[in-house]
Length: 425
Image (tube, rainbow, N blue to C red; front, side, top):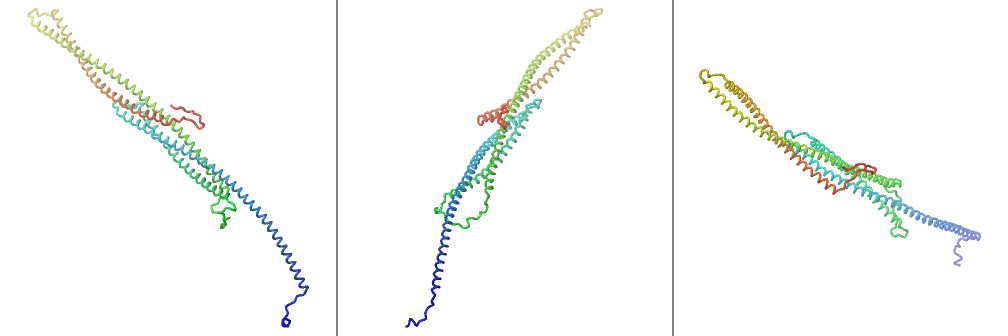
């Protein structure tokens, strides 16, 4: 009774119950359909995303491989280019050192030329002449100074070019190091898989880093470095060829001038020897003549004394005959003969005195000239000694050139085509 007395709950009708059952069934069917569609779309999406992911990963790996190949190719190009730059730097350094050695070696001929000019300033009198030897020595000194300036310019240009090559080498090295690091990074990226322990999510990985470049800029940068290196190497090679040709030309010019100077010196020495021998012969001939003149002067003086004695005899006879007495004081043939004899003796004595005076004057002149010739001979001996000292001094050039030939082989003179058209002296 107690249960019946409680308030009954809401009751639904059978139609409501059937409607509810149908609605539940329809909703369940609709939800199952939606679930089926979602499951099919999910499977499709899984298949599509799986294929897309696998394809993208493969495509990325392929692109990484292609990129690694490109970077490796440029790395090889840069390494070859850097090696050529290193070889060219070594060759240019060697060429510069050879030019520096040639520049140092040119100081010896210049010292010798100046020393020879200084030695020859010690000549005296008429031996101090402006001869071809002096002209050749001055020309040699000017040539050597010009050669030194040319060699110094070559050394300076080589030094500047070495700086350019070093800068190019630094740029190649920097680019090559970047390529190596990029290769390491790309190779590491290529080796990564979804099972790699080092992978993780990153913050904003798709950002564009500052300083990024386009592929065209990347390729142009390496192309510029390689082109600049090739240009620097070409300039250096041309410079080395010019330096080699310049050194050979310098050696030819110095050798030709040395031969011309020494030929003029030998010729001058020969002329001085001839002049000395001629002067020695003149001195000896003059001494012989002076000795003969002294003998003749003694003979003239003796004859003059004898003629004076004869004149005294004639005078005495004439004076004695003036004391004849009376008619015996006659101007006979004896008187005439004595007068004629006195006149003849007086004329002879006068002539002998004049000739003796002329002979003494001539002897005095020959003695004075003999003294001058002896002085000139002394100056010629000194000049010849200076020439010999100059020739001995110039042996330093010959000995140095001989040692240089054994130390460094001569470079043949060639033009830009490589054909030899110049001859070493």
